[in-house]
Length: 177
Image (tube, rainbow, N blue to C red):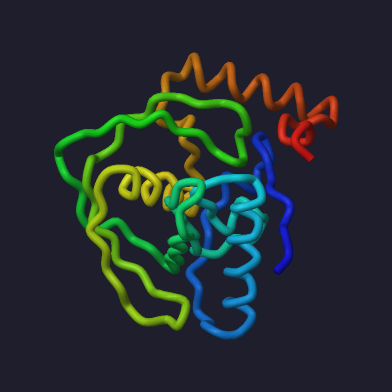
């Protein structure tokens, strides 16, 4: 397994719309393992392929808490097909926007269709943190960041901060390496 470099705001790659996965093979399985290694190393609970500069519709998630057995989930070509009217708020963060967190309101429950690592069609009805995480990661596949769900003033401040960090060649995450 290889730990991939995570790209950071304001990298324009984060705004790309990812393309559907068409080949389910050994390379995809290896890339999945690399994504988990990268996410665990960061550490995080979710990672979209675009965050490691691979514009394919693939997401990995593991909500297991420290000390618990890992519960890795791979979602390929995920699509939110149903959203509840009931809202839920979570303080979200993002591996591509390190050390910044904001309260984001999203639907409390979602139904998502996707393919597993073998290409077999699957469906999940998610609530709570899994629903939030799925929506956050699927947004990445569409070039949407969690800061797009907060006020324009706060979003502009975050973008300005990360542009300044990028100019000085010291992304916030570099401090963690």
